[in-house]
Image (cartoon, rainbow, N blue to C red; front, side, top):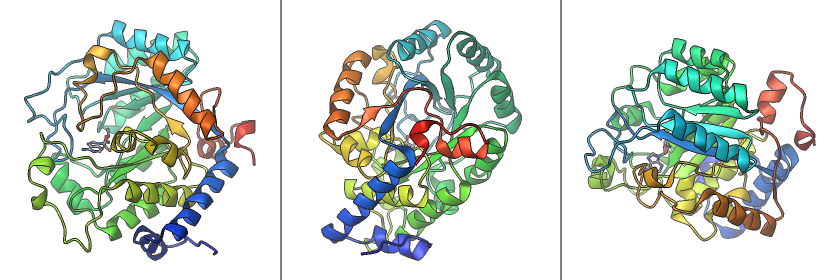
Amino acid sequence: MTIKIENQTQVLQWLREDDPEKLDELFSLADQVRRENTGDGIHLRGLIEVSNQCSRDCAYCGLNVSNKKINRYSLTDEEIFACVDKALELGYGTAVLQAGEDKTIDPERIVRIIKQIKKTTGLAITLSLGEWPDDIYQLWKQAGADRYLLKFETSDRNLFERIHPGSDQYRTEMIPRIQQLGFEMGSGVMVGLPGQSYQSLAGDIMLFSKLNLDMIGVGPFIPDPDTIMGKQPELFNLDVENQVPNSEIMAIKAIALTRLKCPTTNMPVTTSLATLNSDNGLEKALCCGGNVIMPNLTPMRYRTDYQIYPGKASLVEPEMFLAKLKHRFEAIGRHISKGRGDSAKFLYRTERQVPHEHKK
Ligand code: 5AD
């Protein structure tokens, strides 16, 4: 069978496909394309959840401002630097600073943290701090940040406005501007959001390729009882025929299709997929397109407070987590890659040297 995924109709047909044999062919092709374009190395990024404060009231996310059940925290500079030290100690090439849409964050403080990390380590820095004015992104870029991660969550504008109230701009329009500032740009969506149609998910995958993203995270939606979507999904759900289910297989299909549309991009396995299937969700995603993992370095005592959805928090110590990962990678013939793990796409775009692992 020749698999062609050129237009939205073909993506849509594959999203609706449920013949296991055909899907196996799709997954093998995605795995092959991943291997040819990004190699067998898996990039590890140390995730530091610097604050769970949030000013937004998103219908899907457990950190929403109306949720009074969680303890809100902000890491001190010392705590952040201790996580950075841990990233170095474990040999990770990147530190990811992530937070809710925390408007109490002082952008100048982020500048100081970026500069300090850059002065003392060779780590790449990814920021995932939500929506800010362009001049703030520019400030952070000039301070030395390398990458920005802003998921557009769904390309259906109507749905996005309903589930993510309070934005004064569309993320799909912000993304090219942030990329223009020189960031490696990451984005992504949730699969099976109540109100997400097959047509719109196919549109998300087409948009990934159009946006020329350096990193794309695709994971299943997991309902949280402390969100509007968790409490009243009926307010959003479409009829069964059109509603995308938030199942593991649907997420895997979307990952494979994304890899086929975006051969050279970096694709992290989302924690939501690893949560939905803790036995082998990770391996499945790595074998149909995934090539990045973001192990959590947040201090243990804050982990359960960063509850975006139930079951997210892993209380495994970073050293133990890494040891287990190594075994799991070996079992599928993969290995941890060395260095910062810049996206091949970004290196081509900026005409920097293409590392050996990225060469075909
Ligand atoms: N289920 C799955 N993923 C979620 N995210 C937020 N809420 C949920 C949920 N209920 C994802 C979003 C966000 C990232 C930090 O976590 O894609 O960008």
